[in-house]
Figure 1 (tube, rainbow, N blue to C red):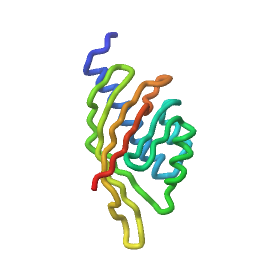
Figure 2: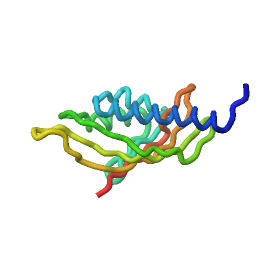
Figure 3: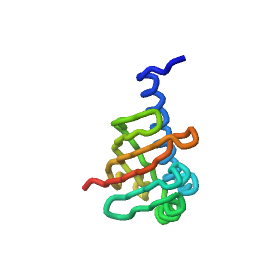
Amino acid sequence: MSTTSADTEASVAAGVHSAIAAYAQALDAGRTDDLAELFVPDGVAEIAGMATFEGQDAIREGFAGFAPAEPQLHLVANTVLTSYTEDEATAVSDLAFFQRGESGWAVQLVGRYDDTLRRHDGVWKFSRRVTTFRP
């Protein structure tokens, strides 16, 4: 069976969306081991203007410093696959970060993810994720 361009795009998009959703879930639950595993071994997580973590160990350790003290929620929307092959893809997404405090849920930050992902052992993983917060 041959793979059409539409089939390839749908497959890549599904893998990219799955990685993005798994990242938000792991981050909000404080599961830094799971979060680090969403990156290729030499992956890079950059939080613009704050920190850059290179490699799974550094990502795990770096994000441990952001472990949630209160319930939090990252909502990711408007994800667009900007380029792709069968083994690498780039995407952009908007994000809103909420925390629950005494008065309920409130938006704390909004921003954007700029992602480069690649297929690693049959699974889509981040090779580079840049998080930029908007004023």
